[in-house]
Each structure stands twice: as C-alpha cells, then as structure tokens.
Image 1 (cartoon, one colour):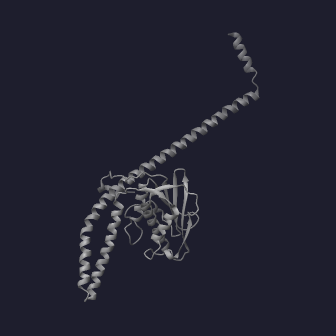
Image 2 (cartoon, rainbow, N blue to C red):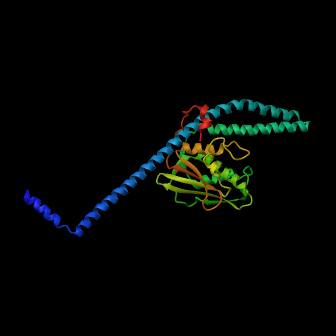
Image 3 (cartoon, rainbow, N blue to C red):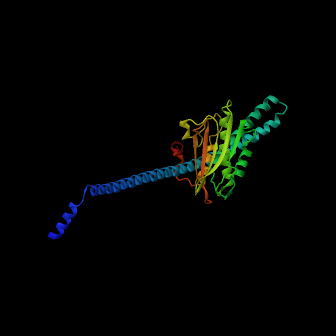
Length: 310
C-alpha cells in the first residue's frame, strides 16, 4: 500500500503548470458543451410547448367555429322559408303594378333587398356546412388562372386598375393534393378581398402578386399580396372571425369561410402587413397530402360560442 501511495504521490508531483492548464481547459470545454446542450434542450422544449399551445388553441377555435356554424345554419334555414315568400310576393307585385310605376319601384326595392338577404343566407349556409374533401392533384398556375377568371369582372370593384403579377409560373413546386373546388373558393374570397382593399386607395398604383413556394418537404405555401391600406393591428387577430367586417356592406363571412376551408385541409392561413411596402400578404400553408375527411363535428354548446370565439 505504501508503495502505491508513493507512486501516486510522485505522479501528482510530476504534473506541471502546462498539464494543469490542459486539464482545466478540457474541464471548461466539457462544461461549455453541457451548457450549450442544456440551452438547446430548453429552447426545444419551449418551441414544442409553444407549438402544442398553438395547436390546442387552433383545435379549440375550430370546435367553437363548428358549433357556431351549426347554430347559424339553423337560423339561416328558419329565415330562408319566409324570405322565399317575400321574394315571391314581391315579384307578383311587380307584375300587378306595371301600370303604376311609382308603386312598382317600391316592389322592385323590396325584391332587391330580399335578394341581398338571400345572399347573406347563402353565405351563412356555406360557412356552416360540413366540408367533405375530395382531394385531387393541383396545378397551381391553372388554379390561379381559374381564381382570376372568377374575380376579374365588373362585380368586383377596382380590379381593372390593378396589375396582376404572377410568380407561380415556372416555379419548381412539389406536387400536392387538395379539394380543387374548395381551395379555389377560398382563394377567390382572398383575392376579392384584396381587390376591394386596393379599391379603397384609388390614388396609388396597385399590384396583386400571386406566388407559390415549397415550405418544406411536407407542405406548400400559396401567397396573395396586395398594395392596399394594410391591416390595423387590432383587426389582425379578428379578421378570420365569422361576422366580423370593417366594411359597411357584406356579411363578414368571406375570410371566415377561407379559414374553415384551409382548416379542413389541415393547413394554416395567416395575414401580415408587408415589410417592404404598402399592403398586406395572406399566406396559406397546405400539406402536400390530405385525407378525404370532413371538418370536425361541433363539441361546444352553441349558445356560448358568440362570446368565446377569438
């Protein structure tokens, strides 16, 4: 035992300053690596926690919207029957009052107001209906062509004064599947909204930019950029809520329908003001593959939904 102790003591005495410095350097390197690993783990845990919170919030919002849709559908159906009678009687009055132009004009106004109400009912029913997806391969340039065909007409204000910029043609895009009809409807609502927003700023040269890009190996992003007035901060978090609108006309369901359609595809839709110029950009992220399923069934009491949707 005494010989071993002596040998160990002799080895310890042979460590010079350079050896001790090397030992301390190695210790510091290990400590730094452990600290870096610890910080990476903390960042990853924070990211996963944030994503889980966002996913839970999105799921809860979808359930509330589904419940609200069920309630709205019931009201719309109750309105549709008497509204049909109003339109029928208005047409009968128009025919009976051909020799009395003044009174016939009143009947025409009644019929016009009934048509507006019928449009509102149709919007409510579209928002509230169950979306059963029929996935098929999507060609983005063809999709955008069809969207523009649906939006570029006299029923959409301001479209004639907007230059359309296409950044989707020739892009190296991955193949993806979606319900063509529903996705086209969602994009039409977004593009119409963009045209209307730009029409609110008539003293500016406007451009609508349609683009598409691969987000990662599992998703694709469609973006619609306008040069309108942009979006006020207090509106950003509410603009996809049903019945919310900043305009004097409209039901406030156009963007809510967009949200429901993209949600049914297990995608995400967001909007932000442009950093490098006026206007805003709507960004739609979609998975490359989607299961042919319906939107979630309502699980929340509809009576309390109007106050809880955020």
